Length: 98
Length: 501
Image 1 (spheres, one colour):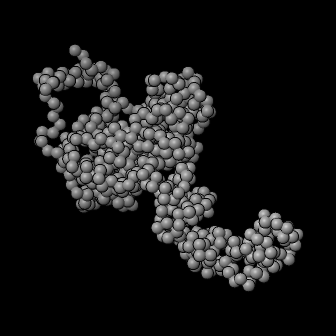
Image 2 (cartoon, rainbow over the protein chains, first blue to last red):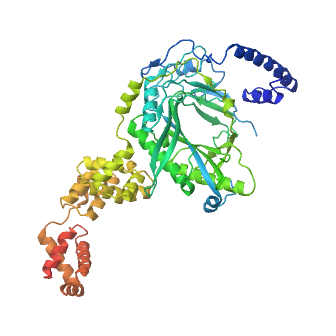
Image 3 (cartoon, each protein chain N blue to C red):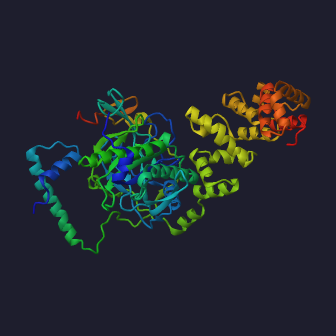
């Protein structure tokens, strides 16, 4: 049952900012199909009476008081940045030429 | 950029506008929504960041209790139901302003939902705006685009990111589709945002200063032919950041949509940018479908389940809400609906209240703020509250008038002096020598001089034409350079001419 189409893979690729070649679209379409199939089998086991789990622990309302705590220094914050300028993270062009 | 528009009137003849307004309010908490980094303004770039708000591996968020409390207060003030149990959700998107690659938000379980806000329009008509939801989320970082001719993202070669703002608590308030506003849709949009801003300020959860980005509005708008039930395709004009712009953006989009539709075209569902300079909008990105964000429950934050006792405690502690306060003040001041509406539109309510608290009577406090000072704020293009005069100073001017030391004309000069930075009212009076001539002898001489110089007018008054007295009073004012009490001058004029007032 081919659930995932080439177009959907291309769309996901665009959202993930991944450039996919034509042959990769087919390749990933079948791989994603298998993954979704596996998840679907789990869904079959979990019947209507089993709610999806988002939090395994029965905790609610974990909050902290509105009190300032020390931040990193700018140097520490930027220490992992591939590029920086004016004490800011430097990132490549966001919009293309179009 | 030029666009085809149809006239506003023609657009409304053919189509019925439907709006949806999304307002983001930046809370005034000391710390961010999910970490203890300070939210203070004006800090050095990237000096208020930590592993949590930078999205470093392994960092765990913990929600700010005041953030949740503020959200509940806003929900209650908007007549919403408060969720018994709700979760945060990840809104996934790839954009450098959010270092985590997702925004922590709420999706199908907002903390507040199903409310309304009554807003009053310029003529006092009340329009009820239904509220869909209010939910908690976080702000993004600040980008600086480098290399483009205008500092804009288009044409930029790279961008610089400061994440001090990333993670500051936001409450997003979303209306249900606003239908039935018709030709008044832009006005309703503006009045809604204005009322919401007053409400947020009254709650004390944010200063809600639009010019500082503490409150931002997205205007969704679509048109449908009259009689059609189905909603048309909408556009979403982002970050409209003043009350006037909200109104202009809605109006522009109505005209633009109508032009596209009436020429047989279709509206593209997209985000649009608003331009302050000419009130136009231009296309942004094609709107991603909700599924594209792949929302899922945030596993790192446990659900919020506000105890009903807490909610009721917060409800009981709500301050007097702006609409209730306005009704009370209007009664206290004894003014008509439209007069109160003008005071509201001018942003003068708090100023007048403070002036009364400083000792002025309601009528004169309102007179100065809505008269001379409103005129100056219009002329100078600044908000009334930004004029360099305090309510206490206005109250002092008012006291000097009621004690007879100043007349209205002199009082205006005193106000002018205060605005010009010459000091407080008493100093200006002193420096400029602005005292009513209360020396009866000097005043009497001035009246005699005026009568002598205007024999014909004096005769008319002697003959019973009291209306002519104005001309003589004017002449006395001229002689005393405005520094006479007009009422006393009138009495003297009539007395000297032997006429009963």
